[in-house]
Every structure is written in C-alpha cells, then in structure tokens.
Amino acid sequence: MSNPEENPAEVLCETQQGTGVQLLEPRDVPLGGPRAMNVRRTLPQRSRSLIGGWCFVDHYGPESTRMHVPPHPHTGLQTVSWLFAGDIEHRDSVGSLATVRPGELNLMTAGRGISHSEVSPAEPTLLHGAQLWVALPDAHRDTAPTFENYAPSPFEHQGASVSVFIGELAGVSSPAHVFSPLLGAQLNIPAGTTITLSVNPGFEHGVLVDAGDVTVATVQTPTDHLAYLAPGLTELTITAATDARLLLLGGEPLGEAIIMWWNFIGRSHDEIVDFRAQWQADLIEGTNPSGRFGTVENFDGHPLPAPELPTIRLKPRE
Image 1 (cartoon, rainbow, N blue to C red):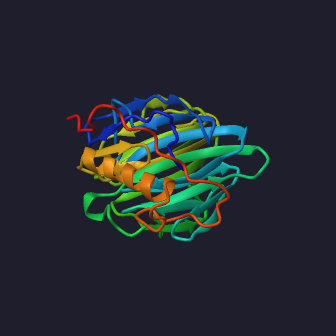
Image 2 (cartoon, rainbow, N blue to C red):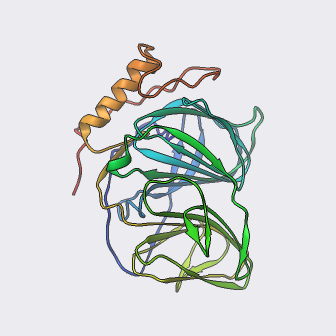
C-alpha cells in the first residue's frame, strides 16, 4: 500500500540501541485522497525509527470502507501486506495481478523502482490489517523489482497458532525472499496462555498487539501499541489474559541511515528529488511510461501525482 498523506514529512531512520522493553504508542494518521481512512502508525516515530530493516508499521481497521489507490511509485524498499479481514486487488508494473487475502503474504520488492495499484471490491467491505515496509540495505536497494505471494500454514506452538510469513520461528521457515535477516509472524494466543519463544539474540524485536490483553516480557502492552525489545534476548515470553492476536517483527539492526519521503526511500535529498521528478515526468506527464517505475497495465484511471516537496532541503538528522 502507499503512504497517501497529503503532506508527508521527511523521515530519517537510523538504528538506535537500547535495553529492556520500550512501548511505542500509535499515532493516528488520517489518510486522505484515494484511501480515506485512519491508520494507527507505530513506526517510524521520534523515539524509534527502525526494528531491524522494518521501517514502517501502519495498523488499520476493522473498518467498512473501499480502498481505491491509483498507481503510485516506490523505491528502495519491500512492501509487506498482511490482512486480518477483507481483500484487495494488487496490480504492478512488472505484470503482477494478485488478490491480497487474510493470512497470505504479498511481498513487493520495489528495488530500483516499481509502481502499483490497490483496489478493494466496488462495495465497501470490512478491511483490517497491517501495512509494513522493509528498507533494503544499500547493497541491494537497486535490485530488480519483483512480486511474490506466499500463504503460510498455521501451526500450533505451546497452545498458540503461529503463521510465519518472513524468516524463521519455532523451527518453521518462510521461503519469502528478503535482503537482510528478518522475522515476521502472526500469533493467535488463547486466553490464559503464556508462550516462550526462542529468538535470535542478534535481532531487535517488535510486538504489535492487534487484539487482546497482552503482556510482553513483563510489560503490559495495550492494543495497537508496539513493544520494542533490543538485541540480546534468547527467549521472549508473551502472556495473553484474553484471546489475543499480534504480529511479531524482528531483524538484525540495519546499521544504515535512510531518508523516507512519500513512497520513496533514499539516502540523500538529491535522490528523493530525482525519484519524484522521474515519476512526475515519466508517468504523470507521460514522457516515458516504460521508465524507472514502469506502467500498471489495465488500470482504469490515472496514476497518482506526487505531493510537493518540503521547502527545506531533506537531510539526515543525526
């Protein structure tokens, strides 16, 4: 999915080290334009920008709405679409046509550049899920764009139902192709259950609570909040006082500073300016439809223009 905020801010993301559990509160973000809905954003924010390579966490719904996002661009990232309810049609400029369904991973690698659209059924439908972005390491951010779909098989672990959609957990691995060590899994934990997971001590971890009364390690984590845990853990204990659903994210610290603006990830102001200029010229003005971002075929409508850049120079804030 895109980030269709009308006035997207520049975001510098860099690895921050810490200890213990850090609770990240959600920020309500009204998304206007083609996706007129509210999301709860827990990443990035002032106190924490990255969890491994995970750089963007939007949590939305359940809400009866219709999504209609015209073709828009991405660079330097992978989008991870994960639904709890509803379905969305995905089209992209590498020729993919897929339906995003609950419990299925839709992983789009933007690499050097891609464009895609997202449309839900004509009538409003219940949408509920998470939109996640992964920043590509510098060595891989110019890779060729691709798209893949994977439907993990849920398995039982210590009384919980677990679906691993990226990486490995509890001896189960996902074949999804990522460019840095990562973990992504959904856990459904029955009321009154405590689970203890063996985790990679080199990873940062984040637990996003979708529903339920949940304690992460020893910290009660409210719904819609993200509990951050620094590297060094070998075990992670989660307790559900009521039926709970959560996403467990993890990854090796990226160790790189990145700039996010609109739907682009780059390393400098000039890169972001160039990405925007190419999108506007190639697709909005139509000078080179087969350029960096390509064209989404068979979409009934026009591509989404980029917002205006800020009046100040985009630069890392270290």
